[in-house]
Length: 375
Image (cartoon, rainbow, N blue to C red):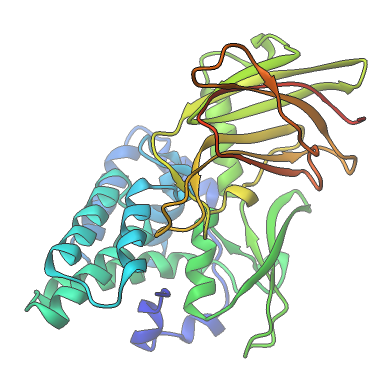
């Protein structure tokens, strides 16, 4: 299923209107002020009421301002979405209990992150199934559709994606797919570049009716959130000890800052380790394309499945780096449950700043060491 809620309304005129990019300085100034949380809470309430008097500035304050709120979840990665996609991928006719489950899971996401557009999108799908087959409340469905359209409008109004100066601004890489799917644009590949001091995800597209070869997405908000987390961390990066190896437990997202990468003397800092509770679905996930600040590696060591309906589960190590044009190499050893000690496991290094490894073994911990630019 693709995100067609906006197209259904016929409100496509904004695609040709002059882009109105978000005023980040103003948004940050308002929301970081004494009344910032109260102002944001009032706007959230109006969104939940589907208040049609909300102006573009209000909607942009909601969508782009959410990165300054405590409950913001970067990456758009919610385990509830995996459960929903599992339901949707299995068949075309859904029971009433399945439709209600989709609505319930969507509400859980909305409660956590009230400005997450995909929460409203999935909620609409569940409510639409209830309306079409089980006498559901069309007023509630239409209200959810309007809430989704408001947040989508914040994204759509920020730019047309044709050039860096008119890039579409997103607070999550997952939200790029909202626009791409709405206009039936297929992602071919993507690359991250810094142009005139701004961060862009440039998405190359398959052939399409618009004859557009690529789209520019401004991802400054994503890296701004990463910078805020770093600045608010109880321990500064300078105080973190340099190491030559790190042991990572299964179910962890981790961030490494490279210090020295010579073969004879390689050191790095393990900046953070964040627990991942659930098995991650790789299909449609942006783990492979997560934006990474220069000089760092973002890694995931966790259970993964290839697609929502698959019973095939692996232990995976996924690494995304942003360093130099040189390849990065590292040594890796795994500790398998029930087997003493660590055992070397082969890897081919990070080709084009990326690497993914998979195992069928029940691995408890991986040790990464000697990150370097030479084999």
